[in-house]
Length: 261
Length: 227
Image (cartoon, rainbow over all chains, first blue to last red; front, side):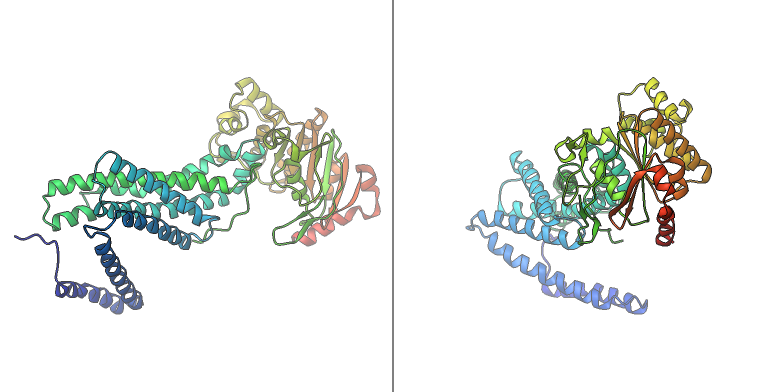
């Protein structure tokens, strides 16, 4: 059997049948999601096709590896803008999320390439950085919103702690801890369930491309552990950075916007 | 001193007042007059937009804020206990305090040592507020700021907090007590400062304040404002 590393345009078109199924479900059930389904499917196609063509240029054998690093920088910027769009009530979220995802890129890519887990090549830098930054981005949104939510909802408790002479670090610790737990638990849970419930993307892709399942599992495990570390790094950086930003130098809690449900 | 909210509204407008280093000074006035804000300025949970807050003649802005907050303790309107037992709560104020010291502050707050292992959620409003006062006393404050400490309590609990306030003042602690209840002002005040719409209306010894024909104004006004 030949590896399923590529499908034809006709095959891609056939996969649209499942989009039609989603449309039918929405229409029959009166869900009113038809426009969203069409828009998201079309948007995904355009984004991925543009990305694919751009990757063709960057992954050319004679292309400079600098383009790959530039790609990583662009990913960090786009991740920052995405986080800002999803957590508008959080003060200084753009620079803080850029700081958090930059830390993720530095730590995770540092480990990956420093320990020679993967070779330093364009075809490894971009997808690995994408996975680390993408997963961290979701955790950054959750952590940032929870930090603001916890400190806003428990403002009376926080001020009671400050009034007892606790520093901003001490007074915010229980609430920061709760926000960090909330942001990290989904990734820990999905790490636990991997292989039992779902087969993750990288492993699925490698198996489809004809790589032996054992080798695919090795790669996937390394990636899962790196994602877990990346999520932890991003949550720590956003949590500490944001908490610092929410207190004045003389340990007063700034006024916070209410977090939308 | 003055304080303007971020939106531009004036909360305190050229307020000048002094609080003696002993007895109970009641800060009276209708809701929204700026009483709580004035109290928070004393604890440096707020800073003035202009002017200064002085403590023993020193500008509070020049003092270490954390040490200052321990010298000028604050009790909030709603009893704000942290999750856990009363012991856990007291540990926030002083993690190194031994059982003797914990028993001492509980006794000062009219609670006994059996409360140490009680969970905050199981206490009545009055007990919770007394536990909050004990927690604040653990920092050995020179001044106790009381922000309408009985507003969320029933009459019995209110009475016990007022008795406790008097006992603490008689023990040498200076209290600055926010209230919009004229009867309470009459019961607890040694001295009264009346704040209306962010300005000092009167600042007198309690007897003089209560004898004045306009003494009923703050309460009447408060009822209108809070109703």
